Length: 466
Image (cartoon, rainbow, N blue to C red; front, side):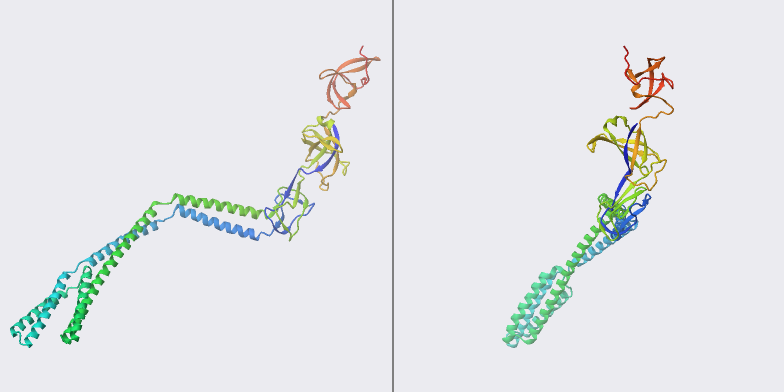
């Protein structure tokens, strides 16, 4: 066995703190308190953290909805509405094309003939008034005047019949030319009227024809405008039809892989954000990871703290003994060896432990090379809870144990071969060498398994074997 001294220490220690900083709202444990696993030890104000979890949960629900929409973007109702919209667009285009065809229909009569008849009527009109002037001057006969009057009436009838046919959209240029001609003629006749060459009645009649020409020009322009509007309507309907076809194709094509992938990526991000928010909220409460003894508390309610450790929890379920062993005894200590422990505070009680670790490096204690050994106390008997961490104890590390054994002093043994021993036995006043089987042995005594009997006298001194 190896003797030494040691101190009581926990099997493990946990340095506990909040996952994020904040204002401490309550401290639920104090130094020397025994706590259970899962017991809350301290909390910080978690209002903002709870709000962050709520927002993250809402974001997750929205992300899940987006994934569902991306995977099933359109319903059967959307498909039906797509077909209906397409049908309506086709019907609207058909109606617009029919309206355009009607607007483009030319006038039932050639407007060039109308212009020719106007020019013809104006010639016969001039001819009639010239004949009338000559008749009054006695230079022309009544027959010639009547003939000119009949020709003017015939030209007026033909022109009136032609004017009953309205101009078409293709007659805008002719109507503009006709109106310009009448304007020029009216200007010319205005000069003649002022010169007394024509009567006011003739000037007023020409003014009516100017206004009529203006009316025909307006009708032609209106017809042309209707064509333009119809063409624009056809273009719009063609565009609407194309969009309806594209929309129906999209509805029938199903989900877009890129949209689904993007929505799923956002869902993963929302899930991770919620997990982080929940972990942060959980970190607002310090919870004991195991049952043990509180050995340090460095915070109080109202104090602002960071993420540093503020509570130390010691695991005393299987406390350990920290033992310092002299260098010369290091070879006699191995993991698993039994240790007898007697605490200074409990001198009448013997506790048992077993070596769990032997440090591989020597350390200097009071300038003496020593080996640090850790031994775990057995569950029975239990240590009193009042025994403080760091309590001093006397220890004995037992490599092997022999009970009711036959012992001889170690110095009585003689090694006659590797692993073989003998002793000098006193027989009838003389020393005789006898080989023995040795069991457990330390620096003081050796167990004799065979070769000697209780009461035999052996020599521990030097013997001359001659």
